[in-house]
Length: 260
Length: 325
Ligand SMILES: Cc1cc2nc3c(=O)[nH]c(=O)nc-3n(C[C@H](O)[C@H](O)[C@H](O)COP(=O)(O)OP(=O)(O)OC[C@H]3O[C@@H](n4cnc5c(N)ncnc54)[C@H](O)[C@@H]3O)c2cc1C
Ligand SMILES: Cc1cc2nc3c(=O)[nH]c(=O)nc-3n(C[C@H](O)[C@H](O)[C@H](O)COP(=O)(O)OP(=O)(O)OC[C@H]3O[C@@H](n4cnc5c(N)ncnc54)[C@H](O)[C@@H]3O)c2cc1C
Image 1 (cartoon, protein in one colour):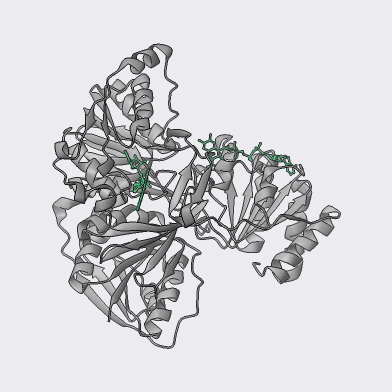
Image 2 (spheres, chains in turn red, yellow):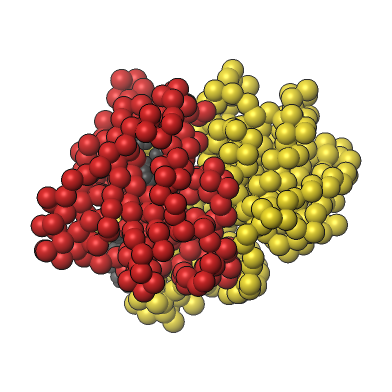
């Protein structure tokens, strides 16, 4: 079974993000982590390999720092990695990013493509379904349980107010949600090996992509401006006995804020 | 006139509230003569839902095809893209529900179109049109534009207000899609609904979320009662979900759901950044915590320092007294 995982490095949720240059730039503290949902995707790929045999390849599109993500994945047990690194790849919207990733996946002949439900920095949740459509594959989104069978997989996904069990023929794209598994912590031996590993890189030309189709140039959605969210005014504490606090809270919510 | 296509999602017999919010917004545009609005329903959709939507749209098109009876991302995306192409629309819009966020990206690829997901505001009259979407867990809103059209947009529930249905009534049309059978490679085997009639967290006007300070699963009954009195839903922090006091479906935060209700009550939760990322764009936030230094108070409009076990039932009682319920 050939499994490809698409994983993205994102700023740590606690990294400081500052809006600069009149809203045209973001200054992001250089603290990165593998996107949480992509960790579930990597772990699931490794478990499937352990059970059914095969090969796990991790693909990421990113800058030089994204090698950290790939080394962590190698340390966890991934067989192969691929870094799509080129200035032309960067700053793409969901469309350009998914187009690029789909070309990279196509070079692998994957039976199964795993990715995260969404990236926590851009919160789009677009890339998985878009990669699937570019490749003409089905997808199952927000999967919490996955069983691989012969030429098909059974996936349990969260839907509003419940869960749905879906059967999908392979090859397919699966996007991982919380609950799928608990990602393993890499062992020291694995880490040592991963530190020495060569990280293969691919350029747009290798994928048959023109720079005008990808990254910022190929994006159909452009960011004009970033804003700083207006901070909430300082909290107003409601004093008194519990009954008094409750009565005052309801009065405010009903008569002042008009939200009840 | 340029056309807007609005994907209609129903829940049982009713159109979803988030769909009506979006249609309320687009009806203003149609009333002002800026756009022609077509609502689109796929597969099975009740007469009642169609009637309701016709009060908001110039047209309701029901796309029929046996292959659309069950939701599949392949079927829905193809049918909607085919209709959008035929009608040469400017925008394909949908409420950013789980289903829409699942298949609209595919529709975008089929149309060769850009997509803006989960937008919270639209500058309709701007040239070019602008779309605001939150990034970095709501911390950084960004304003985006498309480089070309058609384009696909999903709108976060609670971004627009529900308006009453108008006097004008749209026309009803059916359209046969011709979905390619060999495209459908997913099949729903079964659906397990936890509780019927439960208000969906992402669409709820008010949410009462409990954290570890609720101490035990049973105590969530107190939050259920308050939520019922508010007509809202109950959420949970991750600690609570991990402790199996509540289902994963209820989790708010970075690894759970992003919600944006008009009122968010945080009861006995500390306000970890991972949690805040999922609720920071809520309207009014009230936090109840026994620790006056709890971080959650930094993100709240109103704070009550106290014991949830006392304050929450007292709020429910007060609310019932007021509403006579
Ligand atoms: C004008 C513009 C400029 C942008 N500039 C930047 C920028 O400078 N840096 C930046 O990081 N983003 C940038 N973005 C966001 C970038 O478009 C997103 O990374 C891309 O759209 C994917 O969306 P997402 O990250 O929300 O992924 P989602 O669609 O939420 O991701 C879902 C899943 O897809 C996979 N995936 C997504 N992206 C990658 C990737 N790069 N490599 C491997 N797997 C991936 C992962 O499995 C992930 O869990 C920009 C967007 C726009 C519109
Ligand atoms: C990668 C990652 C993703 C995560 N994703 C999420 C997520 O999606 N959602 C999420 O919620 N968390 C998430 N977390 C976890 C998060 O960091 C916190 O651990 C979690 O939110 C804490 O839950 P809590 O506030 O319920 O519990 P605690 O932090 O233990 O807080 C309990 C609070 O209750 C108060 N309290 C106790 N008793 C009472 C009482 N009787 N009356 C009033 N107040 C009382 C205490 O003062 C305390 O402030 C994530 C963490 C990581 C690392």
